[in-house]
Image 1: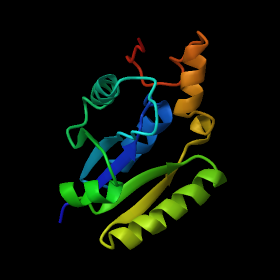
Image 2: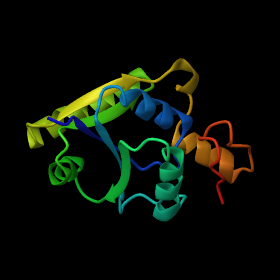
Image 3: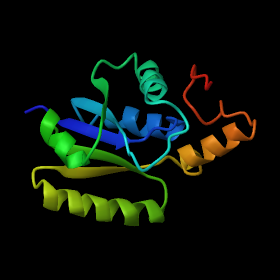
Amino acid sequence: MIKKAVFPGSFDPITLGHENIIRRALSIFDEIIIAVGQNIEKKSQFSLEDRVKWIKQTFADSPQITVDFYTGLTVDYCRKVGATFILRGLRTSADFEFERTVGQVNKRLYNSVETVFLLSFPEYTSINSSIVRDVYRNGGDVSIFIPKGIVLP
């Protein structure tokens, strides 16, 4: 049986922390779908097209990674694509508390799915997309927080 995981997120934009979690998960899963969630209640800084393009560019060297987008519940997307794992990264204890709750709800909604957590490396703990967007909006250099080769508009 193929071990297929979905790594959901807004990736607005993708960060080095995201990249690190996904690359490390390649030794655990046969296939990883990076699923860009479209939350109609959340205004994104960057277009869906740009976010998908940046993720594909980042993982162009990894054929077991695909990129997609979805709306609605992550567990419904997992059912649709036949994934039985949800991959999540944890930076802090606050992340754990939030992700544990979401993972437990997901398990209730779709019993066949398991949530797998990987701990962030210490050097990526302070990096998140919100901080990257704030630095970007204020003219700061975000290249130290995002994967190599990505140039924000």
